[in-house]
Image 1 (cartoon, rainbow, N blue to C red):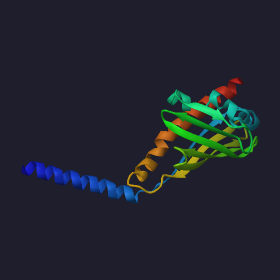
Image 2: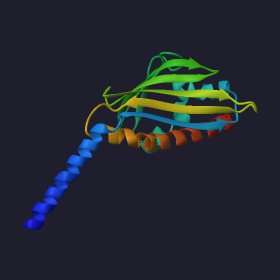
Image 3: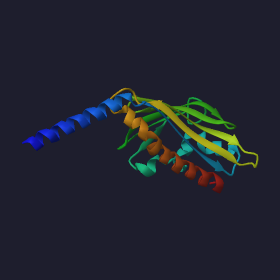
Image 4: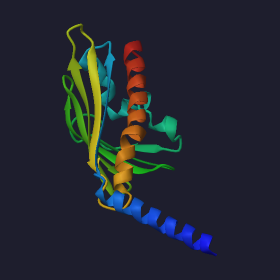
Length: 177
């Protein structure tokens, strides 16, 4: 009986400790990955700046084949949008800036707007003619016992997807499909 009381006390202390630590973890996150592509920014922008072409390189459907994306009335430039549903959740994207020289910026909403974040894909022309593409996303997980833990995991979870997407983009652009 004493063992059960001790185990219960240890478990309660552990749960309270994890919860308290969670309250003090930062809920803000930032994820960034880059890749050099042997192409000019304008060539890359043909794939990044037009949401109709995202299925050619974006990694999401590889991870969740159930995703069904619906394009908005506008598919390129400022105001272009899409939404999606899948087993992994729902979301929406709206382009807020678009330039064939510098890249795009867009707002993301997940789970019916519960989570909002800012994202971008920026092009930096390198002296050798290649272009460094940097995919970024930042946001705030809100304030809950678990939000700080999720914020800590974002770099690993989303970063791996960004790496896969940038690799796909590199392959598609360099092959000129």
